[in-house]
Amino acid sequence: MPSVKRVGHLVINVRDQEVSTKFYTEVLGFEISLNREGFGTFLTCGKIHHDLALFQAAPDAAPVTPGGLGLNHMALQVEDFDTLTEFYHRLNDHGIELRTTDHSMTKSIYISDPDGNGIELFCNSQEDAADGLAEMKSPGRKNKELVFS
Image (spheres, one colour):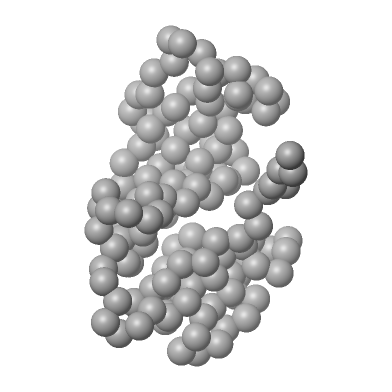
């Protein structure tokens, strides 16, 4: 059976393209690779053509509803715990509501974008992916609150 190599990019519809573009660039640090006003903004983490695109939703589009059908959250990996800590302080400086979780194989911060789309910023806790997978499968694994200094 064929298998998927990786998730290539994510496209989300947004109520206000300009506001969302500002959030994803100024708060989360994405770079604009292409901006077509009224259509969409293509954002990159700096290595490929685009990792995320923000498309302008129709004016009468239904709002995002927590727990509703569709995207629960997107997970954005950061380099390491120091970088995650920098994001924690940046998000607090911007007054963004967040929650934190230590999943044992990852450490995570959960936020929402201006439209209510869920975002997880995370770093791996293990160097080796096989070790992270083993931890995920560990029967005694429990999530706990992640505390930053």
